[in-house]
Image (cartoon, rainbow, N blue to C red; front, side, top):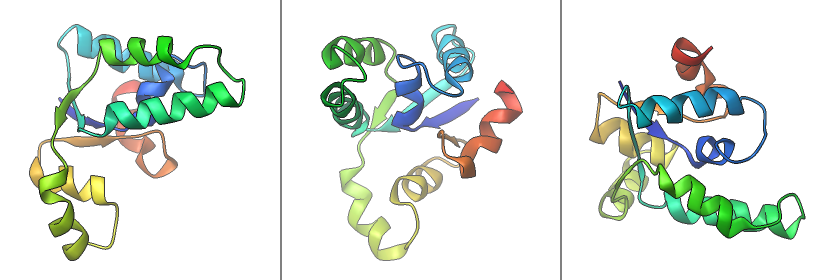
Length: 125
């Protein structure tokens, strides 16, 4: 199965949060080629931003170390900029969700938000 990965799931690979175990199972399945993971090309920057914020708040000691761990199993990155204007002009909902939903109808969204958890629960409950 192919999943569109939100950075919140990548963060759960390195931070002990609610549903980290599910996120780690997804990552392990990806490593074992059970699933394919894709993400917008801003995924590395979003991960770096979230980790540096956590470091400034003294929740973690070394953002760079955690970023390297996340990127070691980075999903396949897709360019988001070419379709951003058209997506914003056409849809007034989640830009990333629409971009990947339209670009690849086989992909299922995978985020840690409540609205998307049902997708994950099918395979990782």
